[in-house]
Length: 413
Image (cartoon, rainbow, N blue to C red; front, side, top):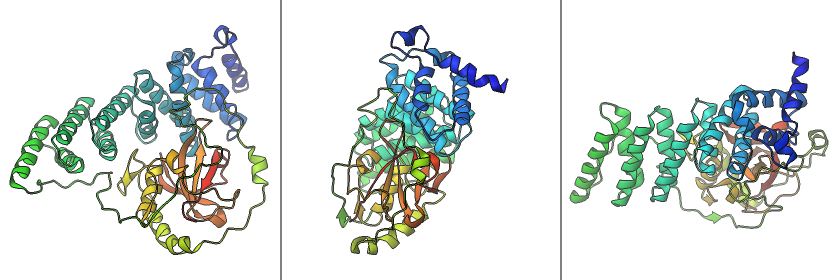
């Protein structure tokens, strides 16, 4: 039976009537894109596609029309993030399907991409991802800061909150911000009281409104419970340097700007990449020489921190939160989002990386989707926030990374 599997898959992915008319179904589109990914050998690709086919079942036969085009890059990103961490194919398929379901329910792509990755540590249904993604977008649209809205999602995930409780807390945050209260203080009260137990979100929301109004009338700070969120409560030092914005070479389109699922050009052949000569590590400039000890210590302080979408603290952090926080705690200001970090600084010479350089990865033609920071240039090692392992140090020459490597940016000359 095992010998028949590749033939069965080949039959499954060959173009039926719809493909003959220039249209593909979901599985055909995913298979065409993954066929271009040199990180997988033939057997790995077969196992992954078989797992995805089994989990998607009839959904895999849906034709990729204009509405479903936006879901394909999200699913591919989720699949690639799983392969970064060498997650089992059936788990990758489970998370990819949940992301697809969330998109089918009208959830926003950017939010689904980040929230779905929680599925690599906890099983989360697609309808819940959709509720969280839409709730996050609604909160931000109503002036709740993105870090607080993301912490609401993480709180709901970690506490297994019903979506009804999530919605109540979201509305309480929105109301608190509309009344002019600090979003982090308001979230600290709500989530801290919820963590204590003994009362539901409705009662706690009413208590929050009463306490904050009393505090305003008395011109004092509200009495807040103990709560350590994934938003960063520590004041950052004033920056002494801000990385300049410059056009990166061959900058890719963002997932939002280019959601079409066409198969990208073939990634670098790993065999050829491995044979490239390793250049000498460039010497630090005076500014980086003085900055590096602090950057190194800060990045190491985050090792083991769990992945939290939108997180910026030692309680939870994502990939671009790690790089922006590491630099920010050392008085260097860089953008919060990876695709904006791609636009700053300068491009070092090919493969001549230096400690502190930001390294970027392209997920199957949908643009910048992951970032890390070089911490051992001599051995081409970088620190990153992995969705399943948390903050860890990885080998840039690992096959899953070098075939998706987009380039580097030097923040400080």
